[in-house]
Each structure stands twice: as structure tokens, then as C-alpha cells.
Length: 417
Image (cartoon, rainbow, N blue to C red; front, side, top):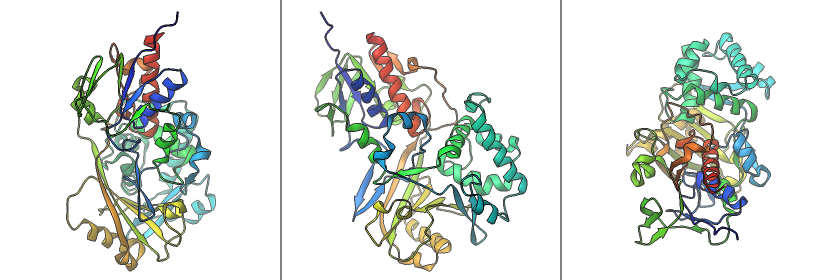
């Protein structure tokens, strides 16, 4: 006689929750996902405004992420790659930093950058070789901050300030580069091998693809959870759900509210970001590249013309410009200040750009001063029948979210073996 199927509840339909559900589905187990929002995705969401696809905060996928390669169908996502490099605005004009392996001509052509010494360029190549030839290099160094690692490696302060602090400051959402050097090395290897890309129809295509395989009736949207305890969930509607196994697949802030003991450490302030989207029909540079604030004067840390990367992001004949700010400034003059900066970057026509929408994401990334290097699904277990997953359990990335969800599912399956 076969054992009756256990009841399984997943709280949250972000990437971790969906990754967990994917593994449980393949193993033949039934479950129900309770999602507070009106769609899947968590922080990976997109809106369509006047025919433009606006991601909720500037986000990219690194195609070399090992877990993403294993889980996602890249052909179906129709990934659109960024140019391997960046245009850094410094002292009144842009300076091109090109990947010498994918764009050798551009790399040779732009050799007289005022803030990049030949030694910096050489050390960049040495670092690339190290991350590509040393297996799991992020596990082979002591825990330290990225800024200290870059200095110890020999990069000049000028190059750190003009490039690393801006580019990786935008990735980490903090420009002091306090983030774990282990995380930096992992991401550096991912950028070196696969660059960055976006799905043709927006970042929300990623969670939507994961949700396609969900069994009918297993997803309940607009169902926020008010509280939980072992074996029981209470929804804000008052409904009480009994479950043998509960997976907490929510943000660190939500986990702290629902079950403080789920956090491995005390809750640190999350990292925030602000994105302003504009459109214009005026001619703009054609290259699908990211533009960086090498001057460090801001407020915009980076910008890109998304319609040059994926034309599907904008209606025909129109451009979509994304501007990204680290933090969540509250100035009522922010739009005007951003226009001033974009006019310096792209010309006076920026004053005629039409503002589409702004997003202020206060909980964009968890604090990442240390990179948790878990060895298996045991870290997902909080108590018998209670599990946790999320990028804050692994590392602050799409890859980390997917891994964490899989490990939570494996922990559930292990308890049922």
C-alpha cells in the first residue's frame, strides 16, 4: 500500500518558490503556492506601459549562471545580449572599455583612456584568467570586501573608482564595494564567460517560463499570508491552511515578519534602487551597451537604451531609455536632475524625452557582505516540516534564488525518503 501524499505549501511565487515547485513537480508531489501578488515573479516583474515593457528596476540575466542554464530554456526566452563592455562618462565624454576577447578591435582602438593605466588593463586580463582557470575561485579566498580585494590585486584607485565602483556598484547596489569578494569573483567569472542579457519580452518572462509547468490549480494569487507556525498557515483573509511541509520562499523582510527565527543573522537594511524610464523618437546611439557614470557625480549610476538591446521592449520607431540610481532618493526634483545628467551624456534632446514611469525598489537586494557557501539542502531546514529559501539564503542573484529553491525542495524530498 502506497503512503498518502503529504500536503505541501509554498509561500511565495518568486524565483525561489517556483524553482522549489519545479523540483517537487518532477518528483511527482502535489503542492499549493500562496502568492501575495497578482502574478508570479516576486522582485522579477515587468509592466507594459503604453506599449513599452518596463522591468521593475533595471535587471539582467547572466547566461553563464550554472543553475539558470540547467533550469531555463534560453531559446524560448530569446535572450538579447549586451555589448561586452561599457561606455564610461568621464570629464565630458564617453570612454569605451571593451572586452578584448569578444571585441578586440574596439579594445585596441580605445587604448588611451585617461583613467585606465596599461597596468590596470594587464591586471584585468590576469584576473580574468584566474577566475576562468581556477575552479570555484570564490571558495579559495578568505572572506573579505571587494574593495580590499581589488586593492590587494593591484588595481589603481582611479580605475577602481571610475569602473569597478560604478559597474559593480550597480550590480551590488552599493558603491563602497563592501560586498563579499567571493561574490565579486563569482560574478566576474559569469560576466567573463557569458556577458549579460535580457529576455526579448522582459525579465518577467523568466518566472513566467518556470510557472508554465505548474500543475493546474497549484497556484493561488492574491493570497498574502498573515502568520504561520509548524503545520499551519493563516492567510490575511482568515483562511487557515494545514500543511505537513511549509516552505517559506519570500524576501528576507517578509521572512523576518512571518518567522524571525528563519533568518540566519539579524536583519540588515536591504539595498535599494530607483529606475526612471523615458522614451523618445530622436536618434540615439545604436550600440546595445551600458553607460556608466565615471565622474561619480550622479544621480544616475548607469543607463542603457533597452530598445537597442531588445527592440520588443518598445513600439516601432520609439526608443526606451532606462536610468538607474543606487538607493531611494526622495527629491521631488529627481526627474529634472536626471534629465540634466542625461543631457550631458546624450545631448539637449534629453529635455524632450517623455517620462514613462519611475520605480523605487526599497528591498531590491539583501545585504551581501558575506557569501554563504552552503554544501547542501540541510541549510534549508528550519524545523521538521518547515523550510526556507530565497536569494538571501544563498547569494543575492538569480542563480542564488534558483539554487536555494531547489535545495529547499531536495530537503523536503529527503525528509520523505
